Amino acid sequence: MSTSTLDVEPSLDGRSVRGPAPRSIRRSRRRGAILHHGVLILFGLFMLYPLIWMAVSAFKPSHLVLTDPSIIPTELTLENFVDGWVVGGFPFWVFFGNSVVIALSSILGNLLSCSLTAYALARLQFRARNVYFAIVLVTVMLPMHAVVIPQYIVFSNLGLVNTFIPLILPKFLATDAFFIFLMVQFIRGIPRQLDEAASIDGAGPFRVFRSIILPLMVPALITTTIFTFIWTWNDFFGQLIYLTDSSVFTVPIALNALVDSESNQGTGTLMAMSLISLIPLLLFFAFAQKHLIRGIATTGLK
Amino acid sequence: MTATLRPVDAPSGSPPAGARSRGGRGRRSQELAAHLFMSPWLIGLALVTAAPMLASLYLSFTDYNIMSSPRFVGLDNFVRMAGDARFWTSARVTSLYVLVSVPLQLAFALLLALVLDRGLRGLSIYRSAYYLPSLLGSSVAVAVLWKQIFGQEGLVNQALDLIGIQGGNWLQNPDSALWTLIILNVWTFGSPMVIFLAGLRQIPEELYEAARVDGASQLRMFRHITIPLLTPIVFFNLILQTIGSFQAFTQAHVVSGGTGGPVDSTLFYTLYIYQQAFVNFDMGYASALAWVLLLAIAVITAVHFTLSRYWVFYGD
Image 1: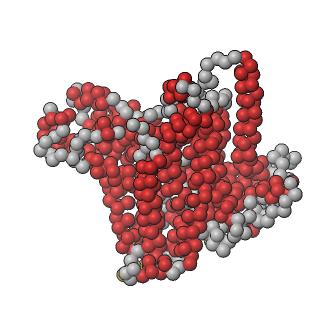
Image 2: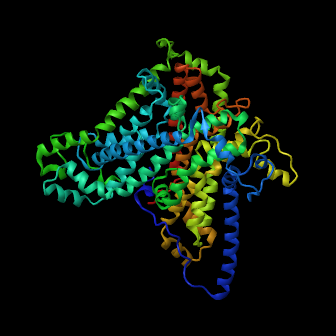
């Protein structure tokens, strides 16, 4: 599937304007560039306006949120955060804790299970390897709805509803097949001579994996970490099904519960809690932007 | 990709050239090691993917409400589907959502990528800004935001008010509710845009130089170099976004409070599955619905791949 986007790490820096040009052309080019930037900035503001509005509304007193569309607040308040902080008898930091536990466990599970599997598929010789790899590709496209009902029935019979196990366990069993695919592609780009040299020196497959492949596939591991985090932080369907007790609510589920009790929640409160729920993603965006963009460019993840 | 794939399917008696020096024992120990390495995935494949898939296929032929054991009813669920108005509504809502929002989203993505790829300063800032909605778009928080923006006194109506238009409640009107979700999906054009940008970077500059020497116009170069060489990326994005949009759930659930309303106008197919399975606990019927979704996605993907032969350019 479209190996061209996956095999080659594209250069991410802007391509420079080609060659010098006569002064008159340069001047008209500059005028064109200013217009260009103007349009792009306006469009960017238009795109981001809803998010800016959310951030501003979170700090506005409730009587101003719906009457004053301006993004320059005349009065600031924290009352919205206080009003929305407790959902179903639990403060929001409990939901943050739950979300973090699920996200970190999922990251650990994906890193371990997918890297081991990818190494075998990319490097070891065994029968029907191509068939296994084809299965990985097919399961990437499989909609979760085709498996979620029996999974729920089993976990429910085991009494595991309202625990994190149904959400975490599958990650330790490499069910996010996309990351296997990603890592296989990455390992194939590592020169084979490195592991052959290690084999000749007597290293077994596990030694080769741990000492040669794993250190060299760190970029793929970072991509996996980032996207596992984003996916689990934004996951709603799975958490909605398995987490019904407010003590195990995650951030998205708590937020959803807050909306359902909307009758007594104002827009400002909802925006405040929405803003809070996005903070981890925004932090990732601020500090891991380069990895994030490169990850999408090379893999096509969201 | 194919370069590293050796004929590993050969019978174990004749190991591939690379393994010959190590002899049959090395080969066998690699077999064992490989399966040990893959054991988490193999267990997951069997227990978390394959078995539930087969189980839901079986359940799709049963009447099962979790309390009593499944009762085999043959094709009843599928017959019921044919006469179920909400099933058809949800299929129509989802199809409209995919057919409108995916092409629009990709068009925006391609357009912005082309504009940004012209050697502008500050490319990375624009790219990040336009990408941000993609990162946040599938969250509950943004769905909540959308609900506020398109509400009676929301941002959209405040803006329309400035130019003298009186807007209604976009989410409570069955004619407009789905369109707010389509706008939300189009709004997340940033991630396909980033992929397009990466694809544009891979077009060799020499092609444009050669064309310029031959006196080709900008338009001709766009038409005969950029577009053909970008078709594999267009295809990749199309497959990805189509499959993803068919499974959209969060936004419709949050915006409609889980009902798919008003008047089922935002009843995404996945939302209908959810209602049948986890609200009505009609697990047999829900399994049948899920299998129809699985088959629909499989067929649509296959059609995409078949049609791609006619328009995707893979070089020569």
